[in-house]
Length: 451
Image 1 (cartoon, helix red, strand yellow):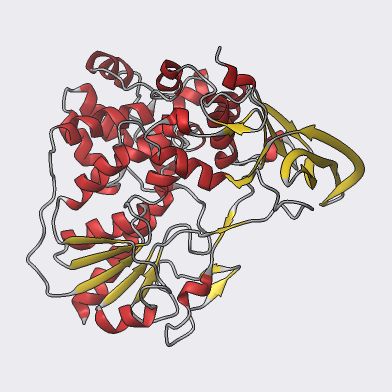
Image 2 (cartoon, rainbow, N blue to C red):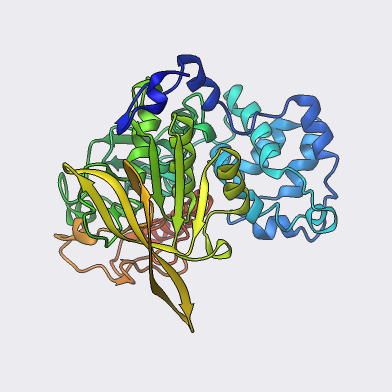
């Protein structure tokens, strides 16, 4: 084991070179043809399929699985893409264990659901591998739509709008398209640059122009889009990071987990990525798990997740929690951060307070615990930053700090729709963002057709 493993502080090169490729290999290796046929035969093809009802994009799951079982993966892929054009990524990152697979009849009866996610990946991989395009642009309508953000919601909206013949311009603040699929998903969930491959597949329909490095509020205003385009779709996601609200959290070594994951996803050499020897992650969601597991895979010796409530309240699924444990991550509950302890400006430990429920309220007990740490990750959620909407020429209505929309994704501003994590009611799932982008695009199309 290299000396880097035991080096104090935040350092790279903690593992042997060949270990990085093994550690960050595909979390769920794809099914081969025979495995897909065997697994598809386990499906009962339920008439009142509970799995389909649990899917935010309402994919006809029994149909696409039956198509696989009859040797028609291309037809299966079309069934998936008809509802979810980002079905390939959703097959990789969806928490299927708490959505379609949780309500699978075989799960309820036997505790072993049909592997819907892996079957979906099999079908979509076949179609994308053959670059099988199922949709053509309708005759050009002459209508133009601006889409803010090239994440799942924006891409789904753009594809559906392009299908209807509208010209779409996507304005993306980052250097690459894909949103959280490119920057926010654990590297072992999306290997081989799949996020970019999916962007290329989606935009191959034509009529979609992606402009990178274009940030709302900096390079253009919402009022500009409303004036220059026939409709606008806002899908910019969340840009703010919630603070720990702990003393000393500005110390060197306290890092936003989302930024850490983004840096890792864009790294060409994982060995060059620095990580602490003793890492503490504050949070209880998927981002916390991703940051913790990847810290361990980069060579961190001790990684601890601290969450202020109990195991049952964690947003991370049981599968994700088990994944963390299997990789040597310790999860501790009923702890909240109080003070980051620094030496020479650098993190050396974190002081936490035990918590308990006081009736309906979570409260600190006054008892303290100190964990030695040279790196602390903040993974306690992100917030929407509405400042970029200023200068719109009209106030867009917010609810609980996010954009308020109706059932079709319409905002309080004429010509402006929104979807994904930036809207009130969003659940921070890729698949939900896809559904909202798709449905808003249909609403935009109806509006443009009438006008």
